[in-house]
Length: 463
Ligand code: F0G
Image 1 (spheres, rainbow, N blue to C red):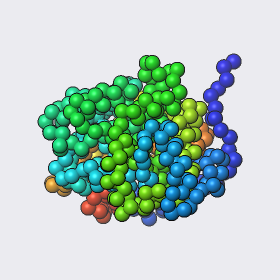
Image 2 (image 1 turned 30 degrees about the vertical axis):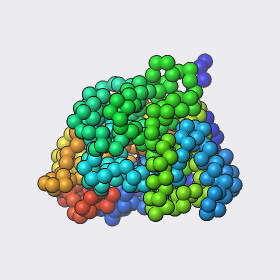
Image 3 (image 1 turned 180 degrees about the vertical axis):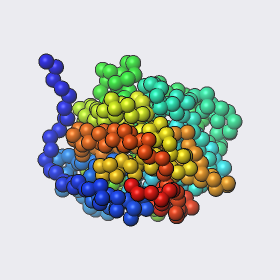
Image 4 (image 1 turned 90 degrees about the horizontal axis):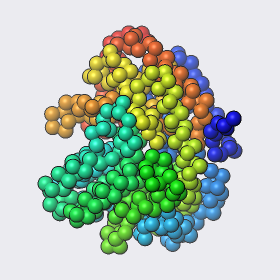
């Protein structure tokens, strides 16, 4: 008999989580103005809001914490991180930052100026934010296949080379500071980019004398998909694939809270010494001295160890297979999700799941609230609330897809938890005809409204 698949670790420490009653949840979510970000975490049973900084560190990472060198300058923890980044990613220079968006802030302070154009594959919100904040423009060149959730394509995160070439032809390279490749493509559903596409984007970049930046938050998951899905890579180790991927990048920004499996941290990696030097000044202003940049020595040690563990096949197989497990359970129940299933999260197609809720009433948010009410599970809306308003007309921007993202923290929940999530969503699905209305905005911030928005039911009715 073939042995079933199981996790590549055992559990050494546990954290208690508490179930709640539906009555409690009705009260709590109302007090939170129907915004899942406003809930106390103790009111959540299974927290799939994000996979960012929410994973479990290993015994080796915790022991590295004890060896941290907290010297202000020249700490051994800094030198260890420098060596790890050189060994695993192949970059000669790096700056530590406190998280991914801080890396963007420091690097873009050097590279991005007013009027610039930054093409890429579905820039993450903070990446786009840091571009637009500098009065530059982000242009999404993701392949069209990414927007059809039922279409099976092995690398839905890919860049459409024709779209990219058009942007590069229509703008002088003076105005394009870099192309950004988001690995994996979070917004499109945790979808990977193929090595072939990376290579072709790099060739286009070279042809137009433009630099290439990797937003590397989930680079190891991307490498796993290359190994599993791309011809010619099955015999290579993840570390070999990672080195090959990064040889095409001039810069990398990293949110270490994802594939370096730490709770907080980030960095920028450079090939060019001059840009590294210019960025160092901004790092000192915004983050900290160049040898710690917003991180403790112990955290840099855990990060180095995490980068090593995070690029091991067994770890990644366990990780991606758990996401796949949840996705397949949902498919079994007939629940519409983005396919193929992504690396860090399952993206539920809320428009299809709740066909009666009008789009003005925030369909994916309504689904998120229903899932919370059903079983205390917290996902995150990737829909109209997140898309925000048009800066000029102030009308809601209605995105093509209304998604509820269920992001899985690394090494944190078991597949029994996944069974609970799937059953809860099935229950919501079964009563979808009774969910006819959603929410309206009571208060919102002028930008990034989804974090703090306050909602009320669009129609007064009891739960
Ligand atoms: N790039 C990508 C692709 C991301 O997914 C994130 C964060 C960042 C950059 C910014 O990194 O949070 O360390 O400042 N994504 C989280 C998420 C917040 O839930 O997907 P950060």
